[in-house]
Length: 433
Image 1 (cartoon, rainbow, N blue to C red):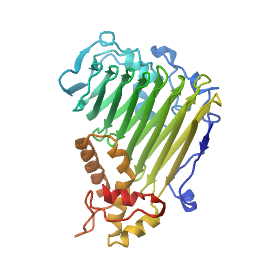
Image 2 (image 1 turned 90 degrees about the horizontal axis):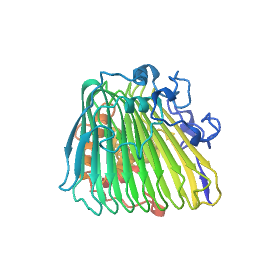
Image 3 (image 1 turned 30 degrees about the vertical axis):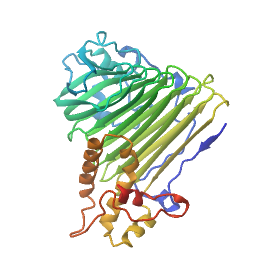
Image 4 (image 1 turned 135 degrees about the vertical axis):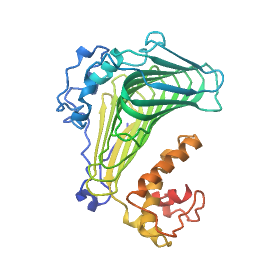
């Protein structure tokens, strides 16, 4: 068994950076009030969850006053509009929760998720047939129009299928909902959830992923818009041999609260999980929260898992909270580890780029681009990748406007050799992308 633990800020000087918060790692003790992460309540009934006060461990990081209305069932809520573009052969239909077969891979884990479920409304099903190999992604757009909405989406990938599904949240309003991703035996599914809301929008959602025998699921979460976004992603394994990769990035501006909570529940044997989230923050009161819980149960022999969170604080007044938790109930595993780092720019990277003739602002923009590049590239949908990169560039313009007449290296134009040891810096990744 190999267990790797790390929680650090890169460089001693970063530990005292105003607004950069890196919290000590734990294995459940001190941050989770239950004896085990497995003891957290799950239920379809709202009444089974007490109304939060904001002091509970699972709610203490959230902006309570801005989301407290979501704790109650509102009869007047409607379902958000869902626009669908799908290749031939993909089944898409809408109906009640029962009619779309919801609930076999999803159980609400907090009061908001239970309230969304109980609110009912229209649910949607996207089913990829068994053995199907899709050459084009399934594109889903959930569009808010200013009101309060609740909804549920089921994505079902049949056995030995191969597909990419992109769910984009846009528009305005307040949304709470559930997403249920089910990958059949041997399936290879990439699921991308984009939070590109207008300013002022609020979203609190739960997304559950069920991985079948020898299946591979890549779950991407990209959060750039909205006023408050809290996304809880839970991963379970239906049988041995499953592989789950949870990747994400977020960019928080002044006044934004972007919160991502991960729970990977290893119960089946010989399964893998890899979690990597990267975030950048700029502006007064910009806030991000990342919670990564991994539970390896006593029966989950042969497990291999690792989780990583990195945060880049671009301005004073921003705050990033990062809490990785690893709970291990058996020593018969391949390996387990976690790491967390929060800090400012690497002076060596900036010097490296400025020595090549770039102005400081342009050098900083390239470092941020390189910081996000490897996550973006792994999405595998060029049109989505390019759009997200353009959005990030627009965000950076507010604090790092390009110097007049500056020439920033274009994608693929790098002429820089890799440093000793073959490792690339974020600056070099940026010039390649």
